[in-house]
Image (spheres, rainbow, N blue to C red):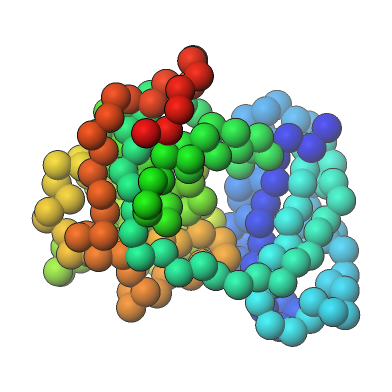
Length: 213
């Protein structure tokens, strides 16, 4: 009934970036051929206990809004990434079913997160878009698994541009920054390129059971 969800950042009792979340909700429902209007201005009032600090608002939806949840949010620090090469799959909508992303995350090894590539082309981590710096300009992969709201906002603002980035071109960059709806673009908080471990296994396939290795 509620196959999709949005994660909205709340700071000191204020919802952030609602126009970009609204845009994605409308695009997603249109792609699923769901009729009618679903307006995020109808979100429930923020509970008193969540009106200070940084809070995550999780909004399930489909034909209608599902039960909205508020939780305190603390960003995790990522210093290392394991590249994982996998077969093509679709996560162009923000589905509640994240089983394929969760499976890829199991291949992180000694690293803290995975950097997912398809046919050698950079996409996302298991929970964020990525932005890379070459010493002059910032770039984000032109084919992410999911077009995030923070990514859309910053592209609209001209903060960076899109590019097709192959894993073999990683040495052309100096650092990588993770962004999502809860994690804003902070150039000083980055993963050094040396902190990205390259994949040396077979392509991960979702059509059969395989152990991370």
